[in-house]
Length: 88
Image (cartoon, rainbow, N blue to C red; front, side, top):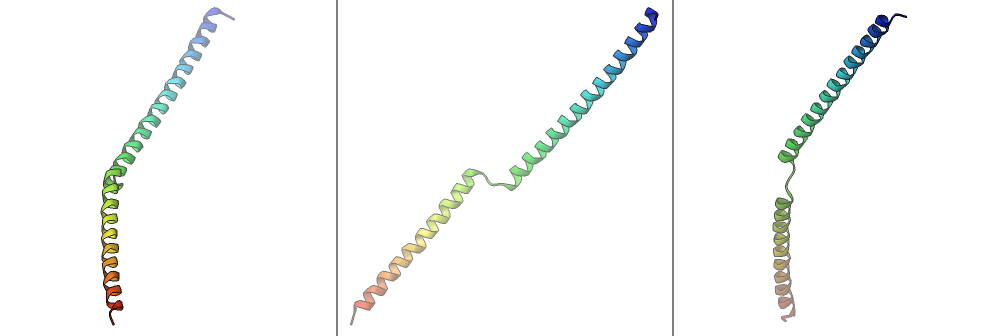
């Protein structure tokens, strides 16, 4: 085999391998870009749709205060009924 033919085959092989590697790199880059877009969309969705821990805590505190007020009123009603029941 002539040295020029061997060099030609090596150059062709190296060129093919370079093309395959470039294609793999571009495919990987496209997948990473798509994943970043999906993550950004998900983060935006979460920011729009889900409540923060602070607002959830404030809501539960308000609800807890309202429930305590209802029970306090029920206690006062029960005390008044007990006073009326004790009268002859």
